[in-house]
Length: 179
Image 1 (tube, rainbow, N blue to C red):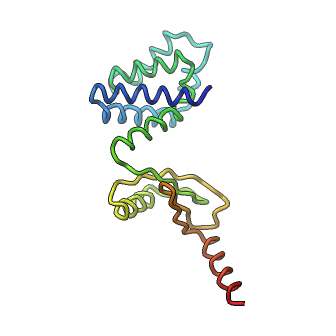
Image 2: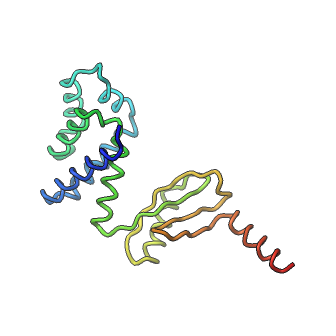
Image 3: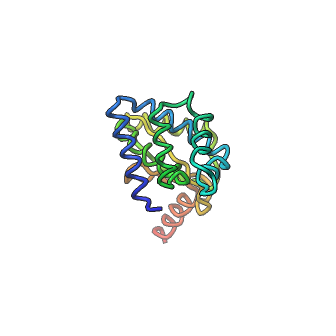
């Protein structure tokens, strides 16, 4: 699948959201769908399968989401199925979310750690950086085993390195300079 095409799908859906003045509604819809797909990846396999008839896919979508999401969102999912892009829903959603954050004035950052962060820790980190930047900051956590304890935080082009390996390098550099 051409990944730039997924970006176009996200942009088209976001444009529709703006046009209908339903940005929050569509964002909430995609969050809900993403959660369902993550909890049960069999749904994506079913919706992606060329062996499953279109009417069966449509029936699954209706049963799962008709009462939960906007009719335009349901139609968008059907387009993704028709275009054989539903398997890449998560990537398309990331593009949509980026557009949503830009529109809402939210900064996006990345946190690299050797371990998963708890929701509470992530929330505290987002609050601290939101205060620092005077605007809402949201982070995507990426596991990086090369980070020795601690974390590396990127916002825009700025790196905040709170890793142990960075602290050790600073000590090493001070010792080398003093020699």
